[in-house]
Length: 137
Image 1 (tube, helix red, strand yellow):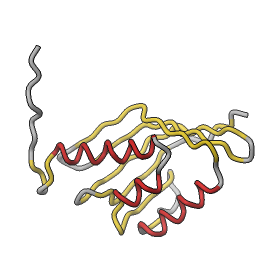
Image 2 (cartoon, helix red, strand yellow; image 1 turned 180 degrees about the vertical axis):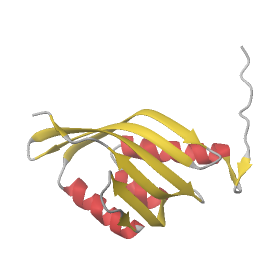
Image 3 (cartoon, one colour; image 1 turned 90 degrees about the horizontal axis):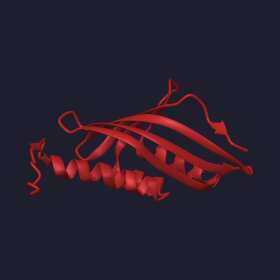
Image 4 (tube, helix red, strand yellow; image 1 turned 30 degrees about the horizontal axis):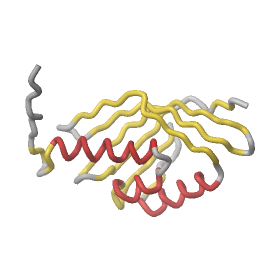
């Protein structure tokens, strides 16, 4: 069966392929255990990040500082994308992830869904939805 070339549209001067590749690269960095690098590359200077209904964290520098603080407290960070939906036209990404880490000699697991709004090739807002952190032992 012949494989046809991908159809590429231009939306906001960004090709759909470029946008999808950026999203995939960000999540590849997360899965490789590099969330700070992903944020440095793909998060907007004025990003807003929110956990459930908590007050959003505002600004790339503050969000990166917060993430570095979290990562300093954990060992054996692992992230895995379970499912993802990318709306290229609206630049919105929904991702279901499973995140595991060890803190204080206990293994923790989070299953979450995030909603990202992208603008000009960067995440301008992100909200995480999850029930609780499960302690495995």
